[in-house]
Image (cartoon, rainbow, N blue to C red):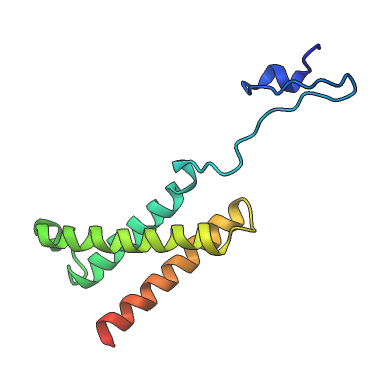
Length: 123
């Protein structure tokens, strides 16, 4: 069997068929997720957390950076926001694909996290 251009450009393992009329197709990995899918969510969670720390902990200045306790709170905030964004990405928006799915998960995750944070603090 002569490989076509698609076969030559990729490094997939190919399944072999017995019938002469059937073609060879690459074996695909459908459910594997890469860390690259979550990088925009993690970056947005860190940015939102830094803004919140600037407003809440530092009272509109960067004095909060000198205290290690504020960094611990910031890591917890960023972890919660990123976890909610990833959960929305994987569990709610699974029918969507591409940048729309990523953008909606970032927006909905930040909104959900800030809403929960508001009700925990003031509720």
